[in-house]
Image (cartoon, rainbow, N blue to C red; front, side, top):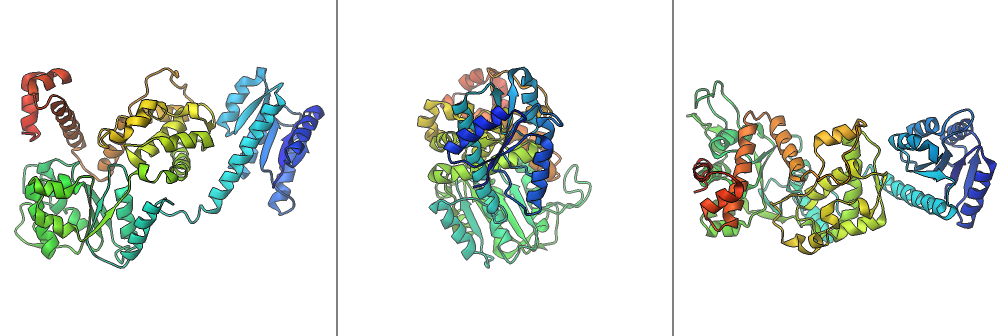
Length: 501
């Protein structure tokens, strides 16, 4: 095992820590100045000597401060846990230590058993990071050790040389698009484009143009010919997400394309051919939709050539720890901050939660923790309210995956915290997690070049509110309007505009 480096100009501090760690069978190496540490690191870089497992450094030393040393060490060893020792009068410096990436700070005079316990925690995190780093280069685009996920991986492997249509089923947030991208990446079409479209996110009157394109003058505002998603995906893969929500009349057009590969642009008179592999996904029970007359049976059979079922996160709890560390690393990279670590106890508590929003909800929780957790090490008490709430643990499995209303910090707050702005008081009401999903959806539509994002998302928002209120009141519109805080005429007009009759 690599040694614990102790950096302090006070011989008594070094002696006490050395003896205490020796009793714990932890090797040590001591230094009196920052310059000695930097020289030792340079020798380790040349292959001479072992580097540190953990570094414990005083903040005030002759010839260089512990904060300066922290910055230089982190530049060379970004994953090294560094514990900064500081007097109570240096608490401002302790804040700076955290901003510089310190694992934790140890106030002087310290309680020796607590200091040893903290060093043990740092050693455990260091060893955990080493395991992660060893496999970093081999990390696949999808993560999962659970048997259910291994079945998915095997299916992707079997389909790697196939052009067959695939239907991916699974709850919202379970990662269906990741499976679609993996199928494309490992297919003969990997060099072609991968084009994704969420058929539930685009208004009915615009979806046809999005899929098949339009000719100039086909409708008001069509000032130029535009290629649809089928043409954009020529030679590659088209991913139709939430296919169960596609309008019935468009299902007929899609069936024709799947049958012979030909379609017409809106307003066009010449057939266009596209060589496209279609992968579809839905969280809905399509057989039930067929029975209800909301989905064409012939289209269902055309799509249902090969079906892959993606398990919910609660069905593969053994993957939660791996996914949590992955998302914490990624969130830290997105925000430009030091990745936070999480205790075994906190991971165990996360693993007990049912995650009705699946992997997407876990990712949002990790983003929330990256911004809101007060220390570099996440403990049980730092977890968001919905995870700590006992009622949530009992009843989460009955919550609809589409009704995600989990706490999360907004991007505005995230940027403010990352830039050093003061955080909101701990007792402040958390920002709902669905706002983070809304930001992701808006960004995806904007990046795709859509110009009616406001209308598209507003329609979805209003549809969700009205449908939920009507379900709550068993279809009584006046009562639903009262509960929503809108007028009777307003809800009637909205129902007509949104096609909810």
